[in-house]
Image 1 (cartoon, helix red, strand yellow):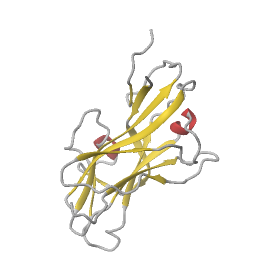
Image 2 (image 1 turned 120 degrees about the horizontal axis):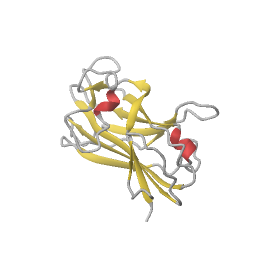
Image 3 (image 1 turned 45 degrees about the horizontal axis):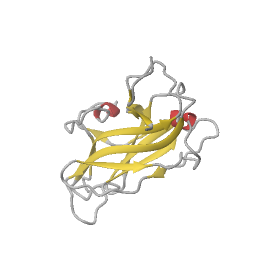
Image 4 (image 1 turned 30 degrees about the horizontal axis):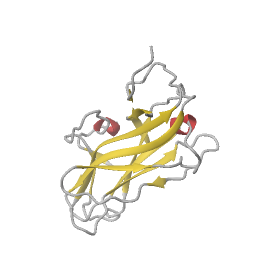
Amino acid sequence: MPAYITLRPDGMGNDTDLVGSSAISNRHTLIDESSTDDADYVKWFNDGGAGASDAKYDEYTFSNHARLGTETIDTVKVYWRGASTDDGPSYQDSEVYITFSGIGERTETKVSSGWQQHGSSVSWYLYEFANDPDGQNWTWDSLNNLLVGVGLKASSGETARVTQLYIEVTFSGDFTYGEDSFAVEVGTDIPA
């Protein structure tokens, strides 16, 4: 059975358009919980003004995990919880995308999950990214430079929100144990 780690946002990336349920600049702390907490969130309210119907985005950084260099990455899945005040059949409320932080020869390509329609109740959404943003197989180096963006859209007078976001990485091979960041949860027993 493959092992996994859970990566949670630990900082803000390049895009910072969304609004938090609390007036703080470190909005990643509103969606980084390890247990479900829908009281804190990032949101977009469409006030009907110019450009308000366009998608708005936040990007989030994740801890560097270079110490995990010997294992083969099997899957990279992004999970997020979202809801909307607009639950009509024609509106798409959220998407997640992956991109690199622009280091070296890395691309600024954004690879999207596609837009998901929310209901008015908070629900889980999942998208598995088969390859890194360059279209290559996942490596620990590509994972270390990854940003995850959250996009929200809403109809005029409506709000879309995301309450939680994390990455689950499954891997196989020998596990190289090292000191973990607070943003990492290891899903298997740690060797002695």
